[in-house]
Length: 229
Image (cartoon, rainbow, N blue to C red; front, side):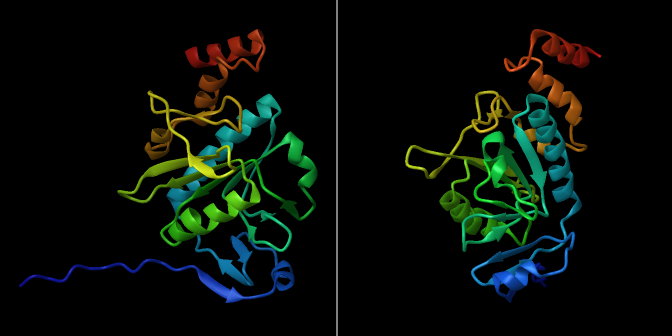
């Protein structure tokens, strides 16, 4: 007798009709809650792999941006009001360059971040790959990374704006490394994200900065020494 396969239902995000004003009045929570098209979206608690990847990238990207004084790197929960009357999203990670710092208010960021990173969960595949893709493109986000850590689905898709202002796939180089055009000189090897455990973020930072033309010869020498230790 052939047993029927066990099918695990795809988790669904919980949605509730609510005005934007009512959304703003919700009590502050650490859980991620977004607003779009007259309803709030309650996201499921993140998995350990989801949080591990975000923590790694936040440290690596944040320290790189700090070292070169390029702007600021933030993570969720933080409301990003993409355009007046438009959706309020809470990207997993966002980079805001110095030129856009004036758009940061006391409660939210108004407009399009320079870089947005979303880590896919089983319940957010369509949201991240289709809905948010279109919203971030329309808002004017400069660069969008979609990281999918699900078993047998592991991949990272990088998108940058083309001459028409549309998101276009950005390739890796021949060594399997991605170099960001929005965060000058920042490099990411997607295979780092699938390592167990993840690589040491400080060592990778030293590897990136050891040959950075934005640093002085003295600082580059310091990072080369750190790599030798």
